[in-house]
Length: 478
Image (tube, rainbow, N blue to C red):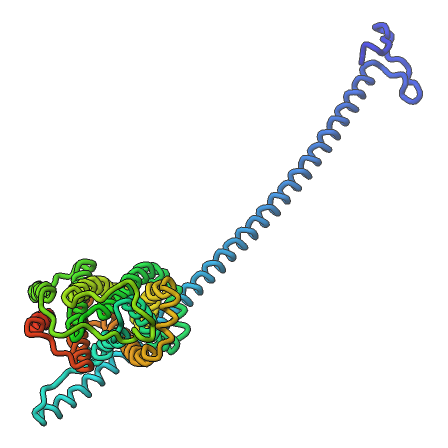
């Protein structure tokens, strides 16, 4: 700015001052301008420094506030994590308490069952002492239970035999169909009553158990195949010659005894003892000899033929052919029945200690419902005229009273036999249990039929039947 101001010649001295500072010397004006600039710079720098300090202070305050908020947020997060951990710990403790409570319930039920078994054993020991004092052979409580359930179960053969008594040649199929239908319905009574008396909570837990639901297809399949065997077995009684139905019962149940034990042993990898192989051989030889054994009596009477009208196209087969056809049907029925014990054992597999009773009841109920499928289908597809005449026949209705009573008892025996698989002392003795049950069932069923109908087989038939029975008795030695 100095070059814009007027200059004075050298040696003339300073110009006189002017008012308001408009006229000054070059040096003083420049100095003043520098001072003003310096003061302005100083004020600007001071203002900028003050602003910078204020900004830094505000930034520091904001940073401190952010850090404080961050610390508060971190503290809240830690507290939330601690609360979540506490909730998880409380939930785990509650689950442990519930599991402990459930285990305690199961243990209490188990020990109650053990206590009941011990009491039964003590009672049996007391009975053995009393029998020993009287010179009678003692029986254990387990053997008594086996005999009772097999005695009930053996009424099944008698009930089917009663229903087809006196069936003519043209009505054998429809009589067998109606008989097995009514018999199968009555066998549902015992398992249904047993289901109704179970604990509803345990029943819902069992029905909703995925492990048990996975067993349902196998149970249903076994029941359906067993239902086929029931129909074939009843048809075998219808075609059996007079005084030969007891032998038919022996063949049916003898084949069932061997095939049922063989299926269980094969499915569960059980190693049958050598006695079972000998028993299977004896039963097979006895059945083959029965096929050629001469009959001892004439064919059955015509029964309700007069009430059903004239004969149809089918004629009465010769007695020898009747016997062979009945034996063939009996063998086929026994093979189908052999799947039944496997289905029962399969249904109670892996049952928990506290739910053994309920799972057994549920499995047997499903099994029995499945056995009714084939009888119902056979009745539906039967000739309507023959079906209505058969069901309306007074003589047949009287016979059905005995069939229904036998079906009720047989259903109870089947339920008890299923419990035998559940509460067996060893998981690897299913084949032995099946052998014993079906063996006693065979002997008792054939004896009931022989006593009720006063059957006297021929000598060769008797020897063959005794051979089958001896094979069944040998099977129990395992």
